[in-house]
Amino acid sequence: MLPLAEQQGHFSQAVLSGEVPAGLLAGPISPAEALSIHRDTIMGALANALRLSYPTVETLVGEEFFDQTCRVFARENLPNTACLARYGEGFADFLAEFAPAAALTYLADVARLDRAVETVLRGSTREQRFALDAKAFLALPQGLAVLPLMSPADEIRAAIGDDPALARIDTAPAERFILVWRRDCDAVVQRVSAMAGRFLLSLLAGEGAETAFRAALAGASPTEALCAIQAEIFAAPFCTVIPTLEESSP
Amino acid sequence: MRRNPLPPAAPAAPIPVKAGVGLRFPHHKSVLAGEARAAWFEVHPENYLGDGVIPDILERVRRDFPVSLHATGLSLGSADGIDADHLAAIVALAGRIQPGLISDHLSWSSAGGVHLPDLLPLPYTREAQDVFVRNIDRVQTALRRPILIENPSAYLAWAHSEMREGEFLAGLARRSGCGVLLDINNVAVSAANLGEDPAVRLHQMLDALPAAAVGEIHLAGHAVRECADGGHVHIDDHGSPVNEDVWDLYADTIRRIGPRPALIEWDTAIPAFARLADEARTADDVMATALEVRHAAAG
Image: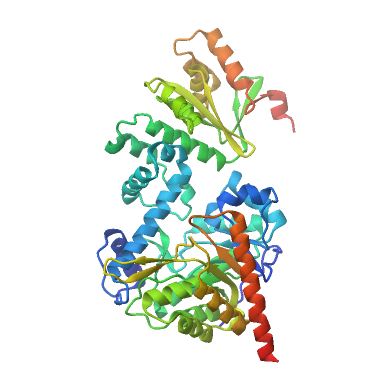
C-alpha cells in the first residue's frame, strides 16, 4: 500500500476528476457516487464562500448562474488554506474575462466593490499615519480601501432590490473613485472626486504628500484640488489631521 | 502511553450538560439583541478568524453564553501535517474567546498544498493513526488543552483499513489524551451508507470507547437521496430536523454513558431560531427520559 501522503494526493485528485482510485471498498453506494458527494460538498463550500464575499454579484446574476460561475472559477482556483473568508481574491478579474458574463460589463467592478466591503469588515481598525508636511500628519484607518473603477458599482450596490432605480443607472464606462471604510459594524461606501481619489491612492501606495497632491491635480487647478482634498478627505469621519507636535509628544 | 496536554492558558466557561445550538450568521443579530438564547453556542472558528467585525460579534456572544469552537479545517489526518498559520489563527481566537470545548474531525482536507473544504475519509490504519496522533499533539500543545475528535459521516470505506472507527478513535484518545465528540447523526449516516445497522455501529463504537472520553454529542438531520442506480445515499446535510432514528440512538447513548453536552447542528436551509430552540428542548427532554431509565436500571 502507498504511504498515506501519496494516498491522499491520489484521492484529492480523484475527488476532483471523478476517476475512482484503487483501494475503495464497494458498498451500497458506488465509489463513483461517493466521490461525487465529496466533490459536490467541496464545490458547494467554495461557492458559499464566494457567495458571502460577493453578495451583490450573486443578486445581479441570480443563484443558478452564480453557482455555475463559481464552479468554473473553483476548478482553476482551489484554496490553499481552511480560512475561506480569504478565498476568491481573483474572482473579479476572472469575471472580467468570463465569456458568459461578457454582456454585464459592470460585473467585475461590482465584484471589486463587494470584495473591498468584505475586506474592510474583516480588516483592522488600527490607524496608519502619513506625513503631510512639517506641521501635520494624516491618520487613516488601515482598512481604508480606494477603488478606481470604470463602472458605477456603488450606485448598483445601493440600488439592489429596486429594479427601476437599477434600470436608471448609466453604466457607460467612466473613471470613478470609491472609498470603503468601516464605521462600527458597517462598511461605508462613498464616492469621491477624482482629485481626492488620486490623492489617497498615491498616498496609500507610499508616495509622499507632495507627489500625492501632484497626482490629484491631473487637469484640475491646485486650488480646486486642495478644496476637494480638504472637504472629502481631511474633513471626513475616517480621517484625522494631527499636528506634528502631538505626534512627537510622549 | 497517555500524554496529558498542558493546562489551558486561562480559565474557560465550561459547557453545561444541556443541549446547545450551532450559531450561524443569520442568527447573530437576534442573539446579540437578547431575543435568541441557548444553554450554549457552538461555532466553526474558521468563520471568525482574524480581525474585524465578525470575531467582535463572537466575543460579544461569549460575554453572555458559553461557547465551543468546532473546527472543520485543521485537517488532523493530513500526512502533510498541520498548517502552521491556520493553527496560529485558531489559537489566537481560542485565546480571545476562551471556549469551553474545542473540537475537529476524524478526517483530512489538505494534500499537496491544496485545501479541499470537506471532511475526507481516512483509512483506519496504524500509519494514519500515527499521523493523527502527531497532528493532535501539535494542536493540543499549541492550544495548551485537550481537544475532541468527531466521527465523520462516511460515504465510502478503504479496503486496507486495519481497524474499525471506534477502535481508531479509542487509540487516539489513549495515545494523545484527546476526547471524542460523538456525532450520532454521523453514526446513522455512515451505517446506512456502508450497509450496516445503525444501532450495531453505535454500540460497536461505545464498546470500543472509554465512556469518559466522550465529551460532547452532536445531533442533526440528514437527507436521503436516490442514486442513479436506484439505491439510496444518506447525505449529512444538516438541513432538517433530527431524524427519529437519531433520537433513538441518542437515547441509547445517554442510557449507556450518562449525560453529556449535546448540540443541535443545522447548517443548510437554516430555519428561524425558535425552531432550533425547539430541537434543543427536545434533546434535553430525550436526555432526561433516558437518564430516568438509566437510573432505574442502576438501582
